[in-house]
Image (cartoon, rainbow, N blue to C red; front, side, top):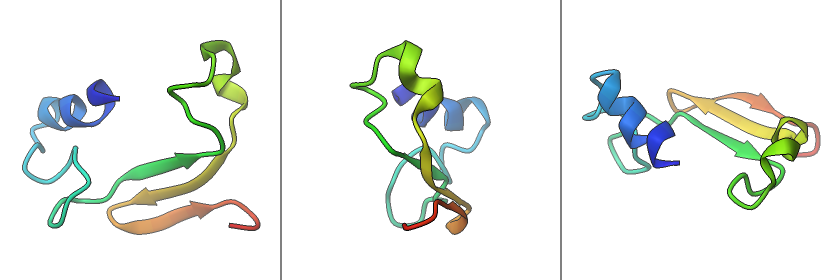
Length: 65
């Protein structure tokens, strides 16, 4: 997870605006229907995306959420 958040923001030169969930940081996040850290890698492609937020704005919301 660290590689896809803090490290990705650092690599993009955006460590001051992204890579953390904190006041003043841009909110880009995805909410999955299962815990990606506890789901076997072979099952990850089948985990539904429940919510996606880009730049603090909801860009995708699954039905019923």
